[in-house]
Amino acid sequence: MGTALRFLVIDGYAKASRDDLDTAGMQYAWKLYGDMVQRNLPGAEYDVLLPSDFGIEMPGEEELKKYSGILWTGCNLSIFDEENSSVRKQIELARLCYEIGIPSFGSCWGLQMSVVAAGGKVAPNPLGKKPPSGQRRERARKHPPTRKAQPRSRYQNPDEGPPTNTRKRPTAANVTVSARRGGMKNTRRAKGAATRIPGFPTQETAATNKSARALAHPTGPFSARSCIEIYAS
Image (cartoon, rainbow, N blue to C red; front, side):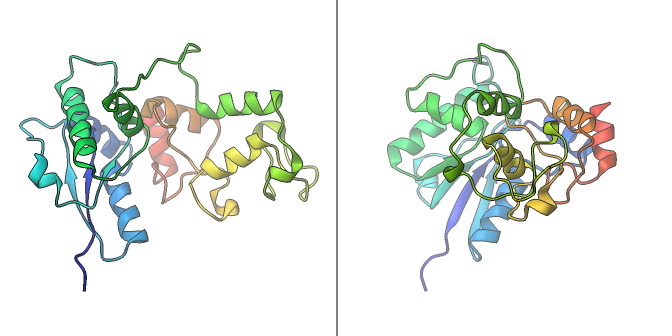
């Protein structure tokens, strides 16, 4: 038998931020990634690196070479915070991974950090903070897609009221809403599930879910409706 795949999951949340997640009843980012690995690659193993914790040493070239890939989670760090030693260390680590040639995957913060590490540029949104769903809905209204490109769905955008024709093909905005809530294949179960908006503060995300009367889902960031209420207050 071949050697089992082994991954390094890098979670940039500081301990104080992880404590906030505990208070909100949310799972840690590294745990979500670890579960994803074991769900899709049975038998694979993973280690966790928490680079924002005090006294943590970053792995060197030889240690990194033992991993099949690097997984960068999202977190609440800012790529523009050049005074934060954790930000600088993670960018340096990403550059080292590139030099060694280790496959890497990242989301949210991981994408921003990897772009800078590769020599690219990340800039603030000129429109300021705004949930991605709102931007997508606005783009969809201005640029409706062709009917042929859209998958079938029973659900409309909640902002547009109840569906008038359940067999009607949805707009791009409707597909986005169904896909991002809960990240599940079954849209009936995912409909209305609370979700974490990447790059948006957890408290504001909870407040958004609360105002939308979203339902908590065990596979999402808020395990119970009460958690949304607590974190949104």
